[in-house]
Length: 469
Length: 80
View 1: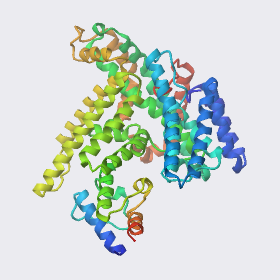
View 2: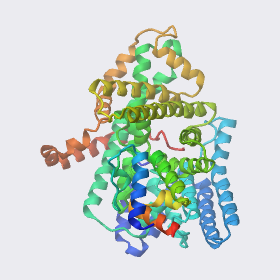
View 3: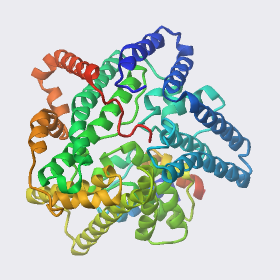
View 4: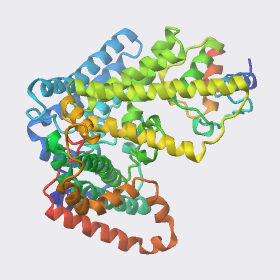
């Protein structure tokens, strides 16, 4: 069941919210767990045993590690077994997708997202950041919480468990949550989904038939669609969390306004970045430090691991490895250049000066070009398509400069493209604080909700880009 | 070594790591208060402290300390 489906908006969500608040406090977590399992069963009843097995096995892993607190070797062995199990299912499915084609094998709903949470639970318990949880219902809710199950945001166990155990009702937060859900529906249904016909048409064309202008328009539309699709989902997830009293972590912080590729990834899918930092980057870095390797070597090795995992997570096959390596090289180079500049300043005894406007513009253009090249790789199905698409953007595929589709889709999608571009910049929070906007806020949100619903009734596209990841 | 001496030593290491000769830390300082305190500089700081005091931090200390005061407490506990 998608968050933007009519059955979710009109049946599941209202019933959940009403049921939750009618329920006595002590049964609310059980109610949310049941709601989460029902939500999951709508999408994946025949493979629900994978989720249930993950809950039971990781709960037992926590208890066993806790019982073995004075036997370090055995405790580590149990952790390794749990990691092999958790990651094995995910990579096993990835292998099946690679072997039989991504179109023929679908990942179980939310597999990679709940795998992140099961690994987080096991490692947090292993590192003694939290004791093992004796209440299986808490662990089950942490792993299967329905606002987060299909596409995150990925919460760390140590953070979410505090809220599972204790949270309070707050009317302001409840209202904010409802507004956030409306924003998410609008972003997904009115902006992201509207752009899909143009993108699908553009990427389905033969390289020689795709004009330079249509190639640029298709990619531009894809960048806006990808961002608003994922951000729209995240808004709904965070909003639902708020309605139930949870503060789920943010996933985006205006990534397209970033001044570097490093900063782009610090602001894009932030909870994936935090997970990679906590559970891959830091442990590998510490291991390198214990081998007395230099800071730069530790950084290069641990970042390489992170980016290979990020790449592998974004799809299947060699393309994903190139995707990870592309960003790894850019980010490593940015780090090396920044360290050299810092060392030079230290040597000359000069302080860091704020960037000039021209440098800021230059940095932003560099970031956008780097992201265009990188995200196109994410979108293309093969390296062959990627090469011909890039060549087509530069007019090197014997393709025309323009075609009728460019003007047709530009005219049709000008509004979502413009709204998407403007709201990719940090303007919305500033606007919302203006007195005049504050006064019309209820009307604004009502208009956004009604528009989103109109699109929901007529839309033929329901899936999210990161769905089935 | 008393608490003030440990804090002063941590400040010295931090000044070098964050390349800021005027940096002052206190018990309530958190990473967000210091310019350039990211995951890389954090790990370098922890490593330098380990070398200086000849101690070894657990992963929960590398990832879970909320301010400089807690860091100093852990160092004091280990060296005592």
